[in-house]
Image (cartoon, rainbow, N blue to C red; front, top):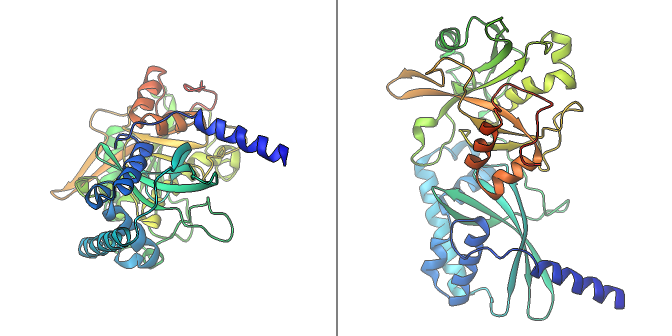
Length: 381
């Protein structure tokens, strides 16, 4: 018993030594504190202002009715129902916050939407017990808003489940529609290429890859997807112009591109990441754009045994002719080309704790671009 009490007191001391975030909407933890303060004051309007029912609605629809998740009218009605339910639940039974102390032990990426993080919160109650919560918080504009807690399940309450869009597995009627235009764009801004379809039986979208071989003037290969833009991504309100994207990564000139090498873990992971990222928005009902980070699984495990990279950050390509980052198909459709930059776990954590823009600035100062260097320095080590 003495040892247990000592461990308990040591844990409480560790919690109280954690940084205390400001109670505002500039950080995920601050947004949670604002919501808890609204509960404490029993101010329903302040509590609603700390929530984002639109994002909650999309996540709920992706899970329960994926074929309707892209419908703006359904999204709006679902958000309205969620807000009404929240108001009724809280005003009828306010959470008891008096005497509660909140501590924040970390955050990790929320994979269903790239603007979501999952915050680990410990709450010390007046009777001395400790509650552990895992809360989803999303960033809209310059503010963070609180979503629902991560659902517990019989396996592990810390794991956020990913729900595929089963109804959209079939390839769209627009498959290959922009392929010729993309091919012309690639040649104009990167150079002549070989087009390959590395996937067998495709789902969601059929993604091909343009391989622009290294030349004496451009001593690196470049891989550019074609097919990700066959479907529009589910962008948030106000970002509709960014619904279409393709991805770019460059590889050293001595990187083997034969079929056997690309089928191996050691040399195939950059291509596999391109294919995964190109399908991901359509599978999980999200979107990709500059400054988004995507981890390799929940814990950002290394992509392969020959690298410590376990995450990517997206940016504007720099290894192309000016203007290569955009291809206007018509008055309503512009394809945005995004560079894929592999990063270390510490760099991902820096982006989460500060901002992706801050990380890209540090990477730029170190001359890091979409050209892969598996031995490059970790700028956040």
